[in-house]
Amino acid sequence: MSKKARLYNLNKLYGIEQHDSNFINDLVMVFLTNMPADAQLLVKFCDEQNWEQAYFIAHKMKANIELLGIESIEGEIRSVERNVKSKTHLDQVPDKVNHINTIIQKVAEQLKEDFKE
Amino acid sequence: MWHDIFSKFEFAIMKQEPISIFVVEDDAVYSKVLAHFLSLNPDFRVKKFTSAKEFLKSIHEKPDIITLDYSLPDSTGDRLLSQIKQMSPETKVIVISGQEDIKIAVDLFRKGAHDYIVKDEDTQERLWICINNIRENITLKKELASLQQEVQQKYNFNKVIIGNSAPMKQVFNLIQRAASANITVSITGDTGTGKDLVAKAIHFNSDRKKFPFVPVNVAAIPKDLLESELFGHEKGAFTGAIARRIGKFEEAHKGTLFLDEISEMDLNMQAKVLRVLQEQELSRVGSNELIKINVRIIVATHSNLLEQVRRGRFREDLYYRLLGLPIYMPPLRERGNDILLIAKHFIDQFCEENSLCKKNLDVEAKKKLMLYSYPGNVRELKSIVELACVMSDSEEITEEHIQLNTQTHHAGKNHSNSFTLKQYTTQLIQHYLDINDYDVLKVAELLNIGKSTIYRMISNKELQIHRNSDILNE
Image 1 (tube, rainbow over the protein chains, first blue to last red):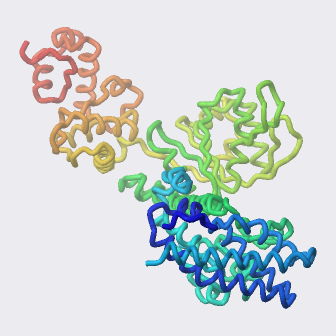
Image 2: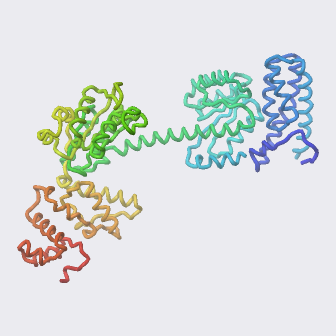
């Protein structure tokens, strides 16, 4: 695994299964299939002001961001989820979702690099 | 961290049944993590579903537990919960939600959710604990059902009360009648004849078998405590009554109350019991509140209740109320070949319980058992054959392994009218030998018989010598 600073931290997953690297690999693959696309969808729904769908996707992403230990955006995803649900401070949402999207794409790159065969 | 949790539950897991768990979660990553995490226990059979539609196709499998994501793309948690409760009411549903919302949680609990867990870093631990609690519950329920069945089997009276002698056939007939009706039963018989087994057999073969069987030995409870023992008491009813206590009558509600040694109850208490039986209601000591009871009463005594009535020691009105269906347990000495059947049963049971090889009685041992009068009845026979099993080193139990309790044997009052003169003579000589330290000359002199007669009886093994000295060499 690269020694460069990483935006994610898999300690939680390793806490669940210390020995089964296949499981971690599988999980990373599932993450790579879903999360970058979800992050883009979140940006799209917010652009379209489709708050209901934006909430649904933010809610789903929150658990994964925590699980993958992407700490830099944990606070942001929570506040986006809260804002789109209560429809408050919506003006701050676009910046936050763009930032979340950028970080998720970077994490995906890092994961691809770290978990390539 | 998870490994700590596993080891915490390791003991609980060991003897439990496998359970099936459905993970219903649309998020691929989270569902994979949950399913993987739960599969770490090899006894958990986990299936994943990513949509409500897909999941509902498999609900007919009636899993033990479902972990349900509250927000699914094609259904909401509460709608799905209602559907689950309709189609598989026994399944426990744990709702997992990304939102901590008290209103939603309360609503879900009302609809029958077992637990509500919020997705955060403690989710897995909470889920693990929750599933293990459910599992324990399921195991206990299954265990309870199998134990109830076992108890019923155990008190299947044809298996528990052994015997096919004519007097016992009559007893079986009466037990059957007593079990099928809700009548009070009074059981009489000498000590050790198995009156309690009859009471249990009646209860566990009656409609009341799913409710408690509560035995009370009246003779074993101090006179002053009997009232509170039977009727219960309120806190502060008397010194030492530090909390409310439910009495045996209430404990036996819808079941059977077995009052053993009823003749030992004092007259004052008899009046109180009579009132309860007549009114079908009682009040706890220290309370005025009347509590309705529905209890079948079975009483037992070794003494002659009618005789006690004549002597004024037992209330006549209570006697007639309790008489109901009388069952007389015959003494063992009147049960002929039952002695050998019962002996065989106890030998097999004892050998099995103590991992001994299977043992059989030889002809002489059988004769010896058949000739004895058993003042202690079945209880005494049990201890005699158990001792014989211990004394015997081989598969055979011979007459020398059978050690009869000659002290009680000669107590006098238990002698049967069916004894022959020879048996009486043998018993009398044995008694004199026992109390004179096996001094043959002294006994011969005391009984005015020839010493050679005694020696002959000893060598014929009609008499037992329980002393270490080898008397035959004298």
